[in-house]
Amino acid sequence: MLLDVVKRAEGTSLRGERGKMTKLELLPPLDESQLRVFESGLPCPLPGEVRELLAYCSGLTGEFGDTVAEVRFSGTDGFGMEEVFPHCVDVAHDGAGNFWVVDLVSDSTTWAPVFYACHDPPVILFQTDSFAHFLSELLKLGNPPWESELRYVHEDEAGVWRTNPGMLTREQCLASGDADLEAFAHTLEEAWLVKDLRRPALGDGFSWGLFGARTELRRFGEKRIFAYRQPEKRGVWQRLRGR
Image (cartoon, rainbow, N blue to C red; front, side):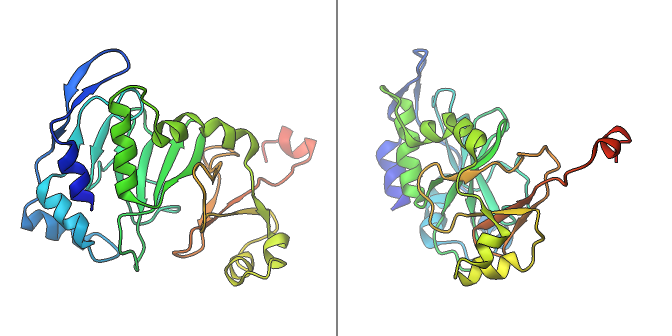
């Protein structure tokens, strides 16, 4: 249970990589009124174990090195990208504008999956399908050797940015024999590339901003299938005229 992970860790000593010592402390819980307001903004009922967790504490503070700066189970209110994660809760960030988000849909029954969304380089990576596992890996950042799957994903974003593996063309989706991929492809034009993250492994993802900050993005409803549009190829004369 999520609450068990937090209770076991409460008050433990944390030592950052620069030698700073802190205690793991809990942020104040949400009262019943706050819980109702929070739940009203979700696409699904608030899972029981998350309600129990939020009634005990709303987040954690302590020394998590350069990887995580803030942890708030009900969101830090600093994330956007609704076209990719329309109903997410940004549960942690690194202080540099990059977030870990819980991607919720109408039939979600747990606080998962968790994705890491980075803006420099602009990539989205899969972290975990278990929030308890997310918390366990977070706590590893508080003491030597500071090895954690959160740190691995946080520091490995450049690999996906350079290679952008596993992207599918529209034609590949149409010929895949997969009903969801085919249906999504029928809504797209030739220039779109698709990333299937329905069954991801640690660190799987795609470069959401490969063609700049205004790269057009789409998601196939509540399915974790994403796409971006490649820019049209322009001739020399069009480029010179800025068209």
